Image (cartoon, rainbow, N blue to C red; front, side):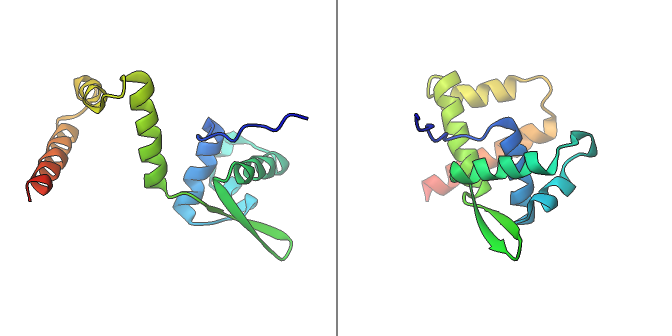
Amino acid sequence: MRQKKKSEFLTEVELEFMTELWAMGSGSVRDVLARLAPERNLAYTSAATILRIMEQKEFVTSEKLGKTFVYKPALAKHKYQSKTLRDLSDKLFDGTPASLVARLVDDQGISEESLAEIRALLDRRLTENDN
């Protein structure tokens, strides 16, 4: 039997679960299910399988407390965000972060407030580099 290649990135449903675990810090299958939108209507066994797969991929760790497994993120949210953005920049923007940011700020849906926040972040970063 062929061994499955470990994925570096979360699937959409895994990201949904991981987002809840990042928010909670840790939780059981039931804890994660309770935080998902009610219309999600996922079976307990399906949710347990998703978390086990995430553990196999090393995105989460688990600890057995009594009869319950408690899952905890193995990767900080900001680290996953950075890794994902780097990959997106490489794949869609030829590894040029400026192109990614240009696409973002050219989006007509971005508010003036968000643009001001982006400007403040850039100004702060440039000031830090000057020191």
